[in-house]
Structure formats: C-alpha cells, structure tokens
Length: 326
Image 1 (tube, rainbow, N blue to C red):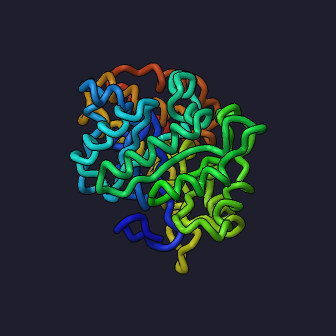
Image 2: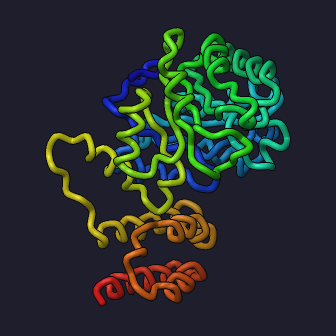
Image 3: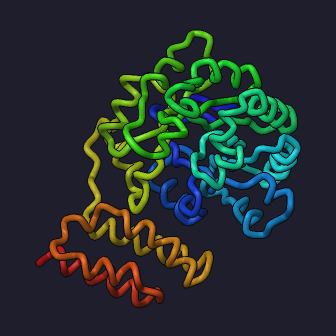
C-alpha cells in the first residue's frame, strides 16, 4: 500500500491522532513496537495561524518516528490553507485533515465532524489545501453526522475527486461519539466501490490482534488505525503484527510491559516537565490492562493516580511487581 511516495508493508497499522495522547514520546514508543505510521495530536488551524505557542509546539517531529503525519482541523478555509502551508514547513510526510473529531468544543463549532453538516465547505477546504501544498493530503472522517445522514459512500468519491491521497473512515457517526459499536459495513462498501482507487484506512474498535485480522479479511481495507486501545498499551502494534508473523514471536511479560510504562513516564518528564509529564502518563496508567490481574489493587491504583513526583510514582509502580507475585 502506498500513500504518495510512502511505501508500507503488508497489513499496515497506524496510530490515530489523539489530543493529549499522541505526543512525541508516545509516538516513538508506538513506532518501536511496529506502528506503520504515527500522527501528531491534532492541531487547530486558527491557533496555528495566530502563533499560539502550545499549538506550534505540536509541530515538533523526529526523524525516528517517520513516516509521521500532522493533522489539522478548522472551519475557515483561509486558515486551513495557511495552516497547511505552515505544517508543510515542519516537514511531516503528509498532512491529514480532521473532519471526524466529535467533541463539542470542536464539532459544536463547525470543525472536525461538524464539517459533515456542511459538505460543500468540507470539499472546498479539502480542494484548496490539496492545491496549496506539495505534500500528500489525507482526510479522516466519520460515516456521517447521524444515522439519518450516512454520507460516507458518496463523500468518499467526492474527496477523492478533490485530490486526497488516502481516506481514513471511523465507523461511527458524530452523534454516536464513541458509544456503541463501530459499523464497518459502510467502510467495506467504500473499499469495494470500483470507482475508489485511493487507499481506505479503517478505524474504530480495533482492540486486539483478532479484531485487526477481521478488519483486513472481512472488509478488505488497505490499512487500519488504532486509537483508544493504545492507551497504556503501545505494544498493541507488536501484538497485531505478531498475528501475521510466520514464525512464533515472544510475547511481552508483565515486567516487560511495566518497564515500557516506566520508560514512557521518564520520556514525558524529560520532554515536558515533571508535573505535566506525570499528567500525560496518568491517562496511560489508568487505562493499561496490565494491572487487571493484580488482586486488591484499588488502593494502589488510587495512590498511583495521585502521585505528583516521578520518584514517588516509580516507587509505586515497582511495588506492583511484588503485588502480582502474591
């Protein structure tokens, strides 16, 4: 599968762009464990054009994580075009347009999935961004605004006509947010459309190697994208790739996985600062599945999520090795 000049091997698995999650430290870990491509946190076009420092910092990428995409969102055509030009200067491998974020502060203002209520403008933004930059431009969107407005089959052709290099489809509507189950039937329908020649990337409820295999085999997508299942589990990419490996692959032990989470903590503290680095890591510690096997873990979990110093948090994490052996 190819996007622009980027060649991917068989069954590529991408890390989804996620606010307050896909910072550079986490992206590098996911890349190490086999993510075929990673994306930055999504970037507000208007904030970027206004030179908001916290937004500009999101453009920082490393050669170690390539191929890497930078995703932008917004509702103003001029701002999206200008932001795309600025992003191009940061040197990613592609630019992704976010027409799928469902949260109120984005979609409620007409950006992200909110653009699904204004398809002509969505297409105009896409067309003008494609014309404004030389990098491949891709789009991530949803099935439609709600169950009565499932526009993706027609929209996919329209976006392709705008010149995008690939399309990622999350198998939910905006009104579903992240509830219920992702519906992959329309994703498969888009992929089987003989008029579609760009890569189709499926997204939604990829939580294991088994669900990843089903997505490829049942719906024929060119790649899959993993989002929330990566929280506290950057090694999920290894698990998925091991599913396709011809030779037996060694699985990671509890100690291996704990070492990875401790490394993530150290990376975040080093790259940001102690307070915010711990906050960035808490989401992963709260979501990771590795502590589920530990009995009577509630008080330790509370202490872990309340820790404010790195040495304190590392000490608590080290104690979990003993707890598992009890």
